Image (cartoon, rainbow, N blue to C red; front, side):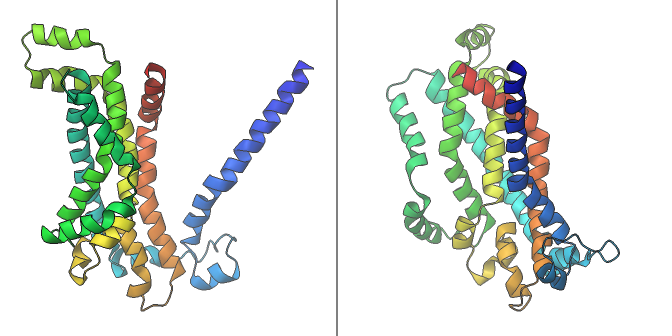
Length: 284
């Protein structure tokens, strides 16, 4: 009876994994090999493998050069990296000060920061647009970096405050007794201990910023924003650069170019991210 239950449990797990493969993994594989097919092949046999003798690598060339993906890729790297660094620095200092120091109104300030998670983006978009226009930050990478940093702070402070609460105060007290300043104790002692939380925040923040389209579209809608647009906007711009004729091979090649950095980033930090999530769950 025990073996029968075990075999049923194994079968259920196998079915779940197969279903996960079909829902998540197969679309990524399909996207990759579809990017090497011509438009005619995509329409006639959308799920068939491409002809090995006629792989259309020129789709990537058209996306990278013709659709200006080289510039969009650089813009996404700059915007994502600057926003990520700014978010981690500001959120780590804010979470550390609000959770490790006893100050009047500290919990209230923390709750106000975390409450930003409950504000719908669409509700803040109109006043934010006018504010950006008044500061002359529309259609610029700097404006987008500031918006993404502010947008990511509530989630980052929420995660990091939980990690800082679990750190033993004796380590901080020992650092102060050894002659460390508050600044040195934070950077040299407390912040390295919160590395799992920093990696978790960095992963989710990077994925959110790299793939973000709505705010980039709203704040990069001017004709002068061509040199500052990011990759998601570049994908939407493919139909325009191809004179309103849909080039699906080029579009799928662009999707691959957008997806590959996310996969590399997640694979590189997967081990640390899992440790960070599990550590926060156990300690919290």
